[in-house]
Image 1 (cartoon, rainbow, N blue to C red):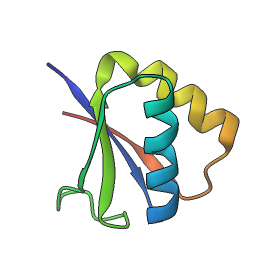
Image 2: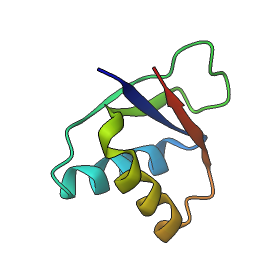
Image 3: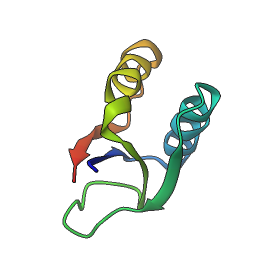
Image 4: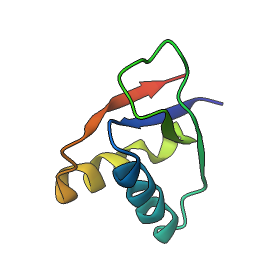
Length: 73
């Protein structure tokens, strides 16, 4: 199973993004950002990669200014 991490520079936007994904019934986890990704607020949103299209559309519509990127594992 592939996972995607959505990384933000602001915790408030991380939590808002997680809430939006949940509203679309997408299972998510809020986890500590791996040390290899040292451009974030310390938290990120983890979800299955099959939902990445939904996540990308939310990012585009909401214009999250602290969004740092998606990372796949």
